[in-house]
Amino acid sequence: MKDENYGNQNYTPTMKLSGVCDLLGVIGTKFGNGECAVTCTVSNDHLNAGGVAHGGLHSTMLDTALGGALVSMIKKEEWCATAQLDISFLNAANVGDVLVAEGKVLRRGKNLAHCDGILSNQDGEIVATAKGTWAIWASKPSSMS
Image (cartoon, rainbow, N blue to C red):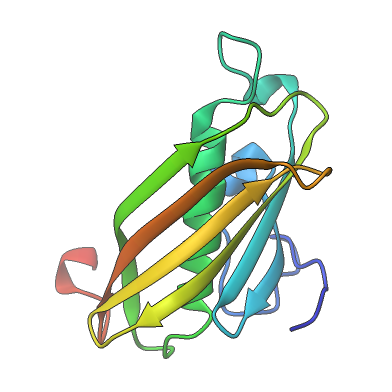
């Protein structure tokens, strides 16, 4: 895997981050071989009422990294979606913290995949962990058309 910074503007792999990631300032840094990483610098716009990064930022980053890990290894015609995502929030993130969410595929079956991930800050402190299940279809479901 290359350590190139892809981001949304010149994202060369087939995976493009979501509009939500664009709005939050989340960019891709790793994509391929069942692994994905995204990063974001916490700003005042990311804070909850308590003055620390909102759990929604953590959730978005982890869902994107875990889902991206699966997208990096499925066939072009296949489709996937998050079926279940469990997150443990361990430590707060503050303004200026650089967060990195790293996801990997633990097991991919025909219709399900199990993924795992960690969200950490620039000091390597674990902010949150996640595990999840993704549904996989052979092609885009007709309900998604």
